[in-house]
Image (tube, rainbow, N blue to C red; front, top):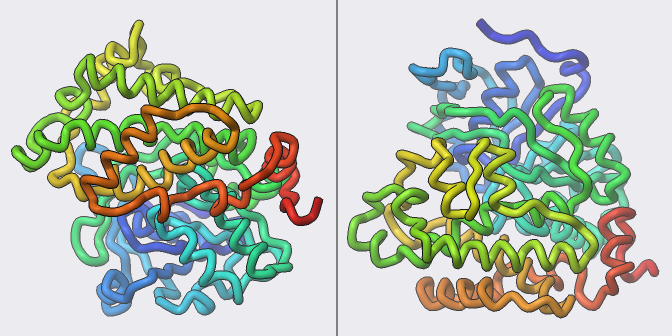
Length: 381
């Protein structure tokens, strides 16, 4: 049965920017709810099957009949971003974090008063980078930039124009810049979602990016095993041994210390495991082993994977860059970034989300907090 649209859904329209796993799931689910939604993608290939058939097929999960399923029509499916956001208020950006800057630049000429941009998710510093780009390009429209702490959906695109949702998180924090505008974002999102809840601020959503702990280092330190087995082992259970867990704890401590230097408290990875999964233990290794949700998850088949290509430049680099500016050493994070650079033959320090790209370079602690809490650019002070 197709669920009835939520209260006031007809009054707020959405545009999903990105037609990958998460974007297709979000667009289909919104349409199934009865919400007006448009779909945009940077390249045409992913959109052609939907344009030809006129539908997205949301495939049923055999063991989860409670999850969304059905065939839905999307009225606008396009690579023209101006057409996509026309008449849409909430712009849900669902692309890898490495694409946030490009999407922001494409949006610049077309933004207008009332637009709400939500990065799904922001990784580390996503909303800061996007706002910096908009201000650098002279956008004067009253636009709110915000980010979700994580992606709402666990989903996979199975075939062209077909997607399956395996799970929907119960709650995902969202925060805006400036922080006092977060309630406006939540009100707009509530036209379709009850799962999005107010986050404290974008530094909290950014620094609570636990993927920074569980993805890059585990992949780098298991590189030989991934390449020799093509990922035929359990990523979290086999790939995180006591020694590797100690490396993860060191990375985690550096992340928490950088946040604390700015006056923001972040949960540790061990605390997050307990809150998210009810998994506890005296050490991070024990807590990982206690998490039943990690059993059965295979490693990536190759090391040229988003766990490095996205999470290093968009999660580890911004933490280390902030740490360098604030005088907080991040030797373990820097070591993983260095190894990732060697493995991928690139320089993630050059392409990653540094304090310069986030618009925070040279700011005092007071100015960083003013930027996050009140949205004031450095040049305005």
